[in-house]
Image (cartoon, rainbow, N blue to C red; front, side, top):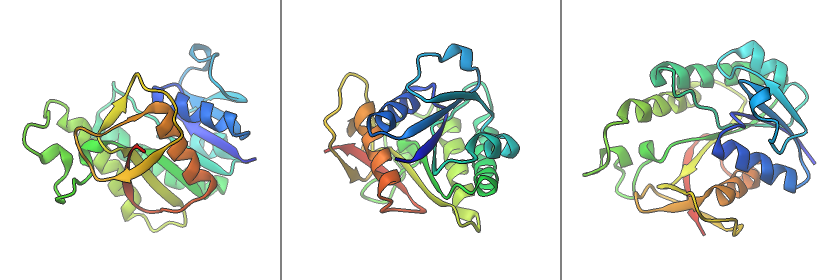
Length: 209
């Protein structure tokens, strides 16, 4: 049994990861902006915290074995929020001596089998491009860091299947707009990488297996 701290635990991905972690017997600390709004979370403790504040990250992560970052602030500038979160996690998790981080990424910035980022393929929606680029900037902060943090970015290879349930199966895949994975199966992939870290310092896509 490990202690896992989940930033952004109130969102759909964060909730799925928390539920999977609890199902496997881990102790879960859910970090959200307003705990009063998330009394139904599958967590041993729900704390208020700011993922862009290194001191806050260190405070809530102390005593944990691994961290998951599923946070997003849709009201913030993506170009500011995602790099700030990455920097705060690098700093705060080091202070808390947490050495494994799995971040929920975005398929849009993942490479397709041809090596082209999904967001640059013909017909891909461009109205949220600033959000895509913000995610990419956050991952770039992780890649550029001289750190002992064992980080991994996982995203759907395409998108989430909002209706599908848990099969427990998943596989690594290049970006593909048609690819799908359920939230519960995505959570399985995240927990598998926490329990048995096999990949590090890379952004990978996963799809239904």
